Amino acid sequence: MYGRLVRGLEALLPLFDLSVRLYLAQIFWKGGMVKLSSWMSTVMLFTLVYDVPVLPPEIAAYLATAVELGGSFLLAIGLAGRWAALSLFGLNIVAVLSYGQLSEAAIQEAFYWGILFLYFVLHGPGLLSADALLRHLVRRRQSKSDTEQNLPEQTIPRSA
Image 1 (cartoon, helix red, strand yellow):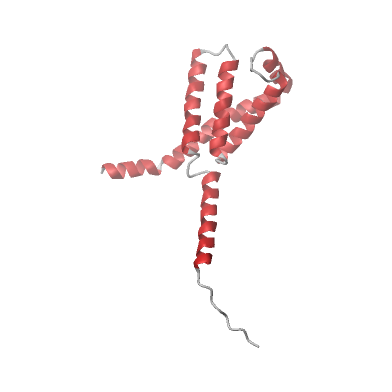
Image 2: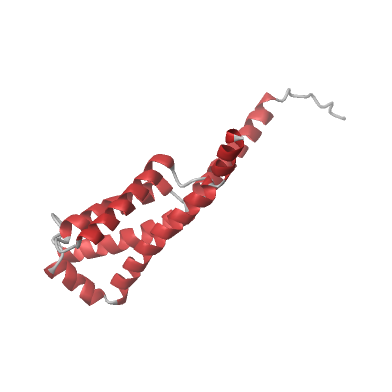
């Protein structure tokens, strides 16, 4: 009975992976869209409020927006899922460190997002993802190619 319960729960894992990916992606997608909708305000925030190390404010704004939009899109569809999660994980850390006025609740929320991103970095995007589909197609092509290589060559008589 326990085994059946575990198998039933494991069957739900792809749906869990997809739902968490979509949850995280929509959060960061919205953040990127807000940045795009008022670009001058975004650059001002990166200039006056956010203390992003090393990068000039405008470049940091472009990079943060690109990572939010690109990373969230890739994470949502599960393409290059580990890399997308890693880039958003890094952005999440930089955001927490560069904005010193975060409330304790916001820091806690960013911590939870970070844990979920690490889950996808370590586990991958799951079975309901573009990565899984591509892996399946590559394996199928390889097995077809292996099968064709193992077939004995047949000599076909040539007619004159």
